[in-house]
Image 1 (cartoon, helix red, strand yellow):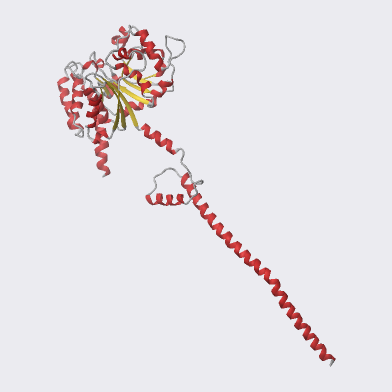
Image 2: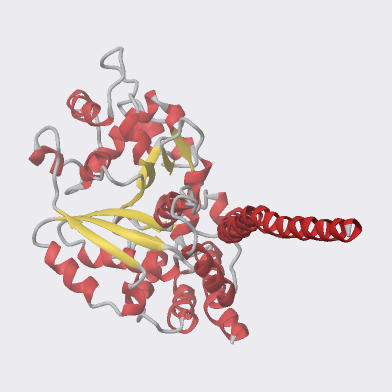
Length: 443
C-alpha cells in the first residue's frame, strides 16, 4: 500500500513537473521569437538601404569616371548610356565642366579674323575687290569693319548682299560712318587722302575688338589672310602692332632722304598694311617728345598732329612713324612681301623675300591699278575683279593672269613675273588640294 502510494505521488509530481516545464518553455520562447522577428525586419531594411546606397554610389562613381576621361569622341550608344547615368545622379554630385565653356568661347573668337578698311570717294569697286581677294583664299571666317562715307554705305550693303551664299557664309560685315573722336573732323578728313586718318582712331572706336588687320583699299591678298594673322602669335610682350618697312634701300628711301620729322628705324614704315593688337594699344602709355610722362593712344593723336602738321607729307603714316620712333619696342616688322608696292620693282627689284617666296600681299599705291604705268599690278587687279565666284580658280583666275603677264615682261615690274605668280599659284594649288582632292578621297 505504502509502495503503491509512493508510486502514485512520484507519478503525480513528475506530471506536474512536465506541465510546468512545457508552460515555462513557451513563455520563455515568446520574447525570443519577437526578437528574432524584429532582427529579421531590421536586416531587410538595412539590405534595402544598402541597395539604394550602392545604386547611388554606382551612379556617382560612373559619373566621376566619365568626368575624368579625356574629351575623346564617344560612339552614339556610349553617349546615350552616359546621359542616362547622369540623369540618375544627384545634381550636387554631377560634375560641371567649368573650364570647358570659356575655352570653347575663346576658340570661337579665335576662329574669326577682323579686317578694317576705310573707303571714301570713288573707292567702292576697289574696296570690294580687296574684300573679294581676302575671301577667295582665306580659311577662317572674316569680320569686315568697313568705314565709309554716307553715300557709299548703302552701295556696299547692296553689293555685298548680292554675293552667293557659298561666299557670304564665310564672312560678316559692319559699316561705320567716318568719325574722329578728337580734334577738328574736317581737318582730320583732309589729312593726306580723304578719310585716311580714320585708321588712327580704330583702337578707340572698336573697343570690343581684341586684334585687327587694317589695309588700304588698294590692297590685294594673294594668299590666305590667316597667314598674316598668325604674326600676332610672334609678338613679344611689348609689341602691339606690325608693319613692313617703307623701303628696303636707305639710299633711295623717301624718309631717309626727305623726312622733316622723326620716323621709325632707317627707312620708316608703311601703314598700308597694319596688324594691331588693339587691347595692348588701348592699355599702353606711349613715350613722346611733348611731355615727360606717357600718353594714351587717344590722348597722343591730336597734340602730335598739332606739333608736326606743318612737317608731315604722308599724313597719318607720318604720325605713326613719329609714335614708333619714340616707342620702337612696340613695333613688329614683317618682311616686304607682305606689303609689296611699285617701289619694290620700279627702281629695280629690291624685295628679296618676294623674289624667294613670291608676293603675299600686293599694295597698288600710286593708282597703278587704274592706269598703265605699272601694268603688272593692273593685270592682277583686273583678273581678281573680273573673276566669277565659284568658277575654277586655275582656269578663270590664274591662267588669265599668267597669259596677260606675257604682255608686261618689258616693263619695270613685269620683268620678274615669278615675283607676282609664285605665291598665288602656290595658294591656288593648296586651295585645290583642300577643296577638291581631299573631298574626292573622302568620298
